[in-house]
Length: 399
Image 1: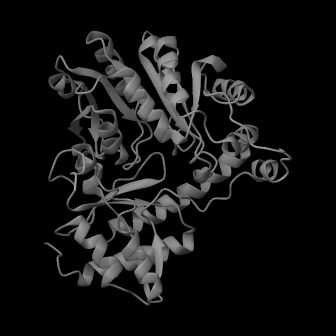
Image 2: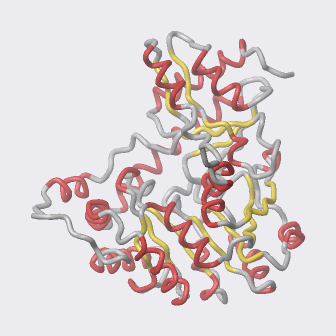
């Protein structure tokens, strides 16, 4: 039998999804499983968007333009102006989720074997996207003791080689919830100019910034308009993860025209997803105000509950709806699987995401996990109690 490709063997399993069989088995035993492993909020999607899809009277579902429906792109261009991001509808490509936007950006901006610098821990699928595009991630580690603050630019500069083509940031960050400050982004901007690099930014959580903190987009940075690529998605913004609609945005026309060739190869983004996304653009600010207030309540319950447990460290996130947590455990993967296979508290348990899969440096994150505070307050309180009780009896607990 022919061998599986090297690329296939290198492709990592998702730490977010690989434990699903164990969660399913736990449920078959009658356990309640609180899913904190995945960024799937229980927040209702905007009703107007749902109703627009329900009432749609298409007689057949045709291909859209490879860059996405023009009506949707025009509305998105107006939406970004609310955030002082001045773009035209021709500056974007609608993609199949934010994931495809990231892959298109990698392939448009970098050749196989070239490098992108990313602060770790980072969104785990960047590892897989890099393998798909044939590029290499050069990680720079943010530390939990420093609340995952962006490492000094001097450390970024030390990683730059003749194969470095880009720096990628995720703001607000998944999995840490860290929100980058303007001066941090301006320092990265100066480095990008100095070394003739692209600056790629995954900003899918921009609606979710807390405690009065300012959202600063890379599109706000002056002097690098032709070097900047923004990746976005409706998944988290409107709690519509399943519609699979994102966007690749750049003022650099060559990047957009190159990305469009990849978009043409996959024909077009999902039709009904675009219909839902276009309708959702009209969602009022009051929707986001309510959602942000709900996430702040959830965040505070999770962070306060965890930091009361002996040996646990959970920095308070300023954005998104995740927190990265250090636990007194021997191995994150073993602990998360044990929770599903061998543990229960009042017939309940928790599904978490092992954080080692959110690093690129081998060996890091083995005593850390990611929690998505995506469930209602009552469920989160019960889930935190499960974690507290689990750490009392976990056989691999360390001092």
